[in-house]
Length: 173
Image (tube, rainbow, N blue to C red):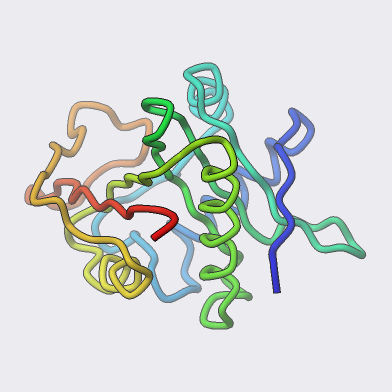
């Protein structure tokens, strides 16, 4: 079953922020970051900055209630290479296959726009999440990127060994 996606509007910002903070830093869900990053995952200024920088937030909403069920950010790095970030699933829907369907819908959206490769970064200590993406066809590139220890807009790290692992997947094959 396909997850229909719709572009975020400014009126959706409070729901996006609440969902991302609950899913990434809350107490429910199988892949929260609270053990190694404290504070909020996002805020309105950060969300606005990401969108101004070219990120498109796509939303999955309940057909009946219009409640936000999940969201994902996509940004074209090059015409055929897109960055996928902030894949967020309501904690109540985690472990039910919704995240996989949301990821597939985001990949399909990017492919229609010309993407042939999807790239993402995941914090290195999120071992179960990296494995989840690998089961969906993503591969480690061998590249890592530094964690922004001097920028607390994404939260305050509780560990000194954080970095981002770069993953990518070729689409259409």
